[in-house]
Image 1: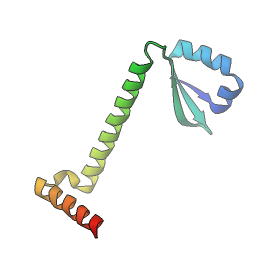
Image 2: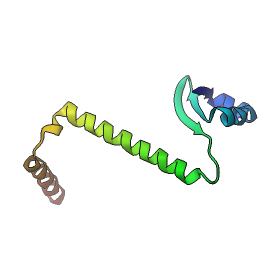
Image 3: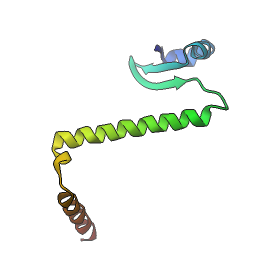
Length: 95
């Protein structure tokens, strides 16, 4: 995986596009920290690329929620416990 800085993106954009055509993915950094990923695509593949990206983000979000549930013990709740929590939240909203 190749890395480029925001500054390189701004000042050397032609070279960045050439590199992207070869490597297909570039990590954009700001102050040495990753902030974005540039990924090569085509007009024909754009929708499929976006769908894959959205699916990957959703999977990461689910994995993060599952991890938080394990850390807090929420993964051990019974269906009755969950329904009680939902009921309590709804009651608080209507008060």
